[in-house]
Picture 1 (cartoon, rainbow, N blue to C red):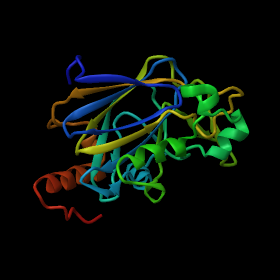
Picture 2: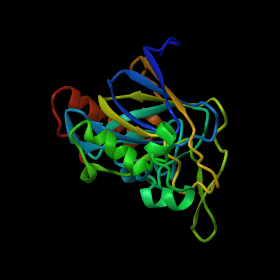
Picture 3: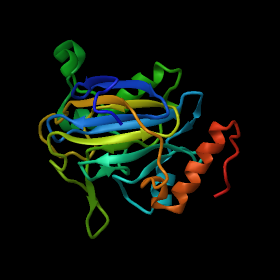
Picture 4: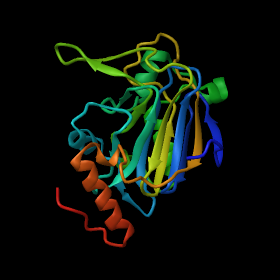
Length: 245
């Protein structure tokens, strides 16, 4: 991975965007001010029926949160991307995206006519706007990752958002193992207890990346990940059958 990005941009606070990231590239996400939340979904751009599967991602890696060394799986048993660097240390994969009703109840209604790009957008609305650009819609929504957000469980199993868990400048590097449509929203986390609209900007960069080496930490962290990478290899050789779980 080179220090000089091929492209960089900033997702303004609460806004949404989508792009295709090709295999062999890194998508770097940076929490510019600290306290950001970036909701993210993944789809196979050649077959959007293949999409991010967080239940399988968590189950096969025996984890509740995501961080360095973890992989993000598709529902076909392949690896969309690997988390090869992470200075935030904790990314929520259990709580989904905020709804319009939740946003209005917690932070009030503020529309484009009143606030222009400072309007209050929900995570689901942001995803739907971007999915519509690619011929997808509500039925294509799936469980999303919330990068830079930390959620813990208390003794009774209730989930609690941890404010300020991600410091300014925290970053996460996603190395893409197959081409992917990336859909992003910067709407606040649905459990964020802040009294004022807490959306923050997130910078993103695209870098070329070297292929996984012989001792790749993400691929070799679990036998399940090695199988996912073998499924990717079969897919890229033109055989989409994959190995049985």
